[in-house]
Length: 207
Image 1 (cartoon, rainbow, N blue to C red):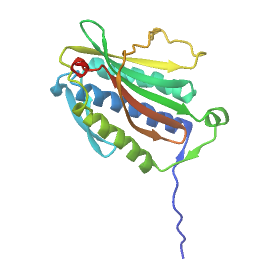
Image 2: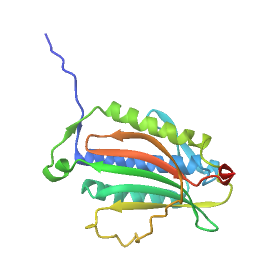
Image 3: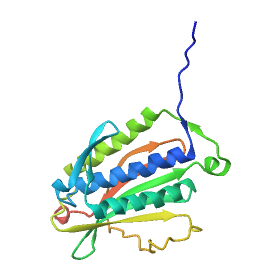
């Protein structure tokens, strides 16, 4: 008689790195779409995390995010990445209107000793799915971006990380007295990602 055991998914540092960097690519695309940064027709539909998502077909955006994910993967695997922030700014004035903040906690034992962790792939997918749903619903409370906007990505790393030639040192691009909304988090058991969006107060709220 054959015995059955519940299978457990082994999460390695490289596997966790792939999950986190891929998530950021999809999250960035979802933010750009839902915040109307590019024309709706410039996005194509895909299915990911059990959800219909949209990816930019703009070559400049695709190249930017692909190069970004390559660099983030390097920092994640080295345990050196602390935070990624996608910043939305006014094209005319460079005023910061929104900051999408992804804070990352890394299990240092995994990085230093090469051990693995266990967590169900389905459970990780459900956690990411909840974040993606929240990004899509953010248009219900975020102020309308009624002017042309641009975006940038900030990476916060350990102090001993050399700045690649394609990156530059930057100010933190903060928002004075922002409104903040904490979104769900996900945890691979190696990398824990907390998500927070902060945005400029609508001046009408001050009346």
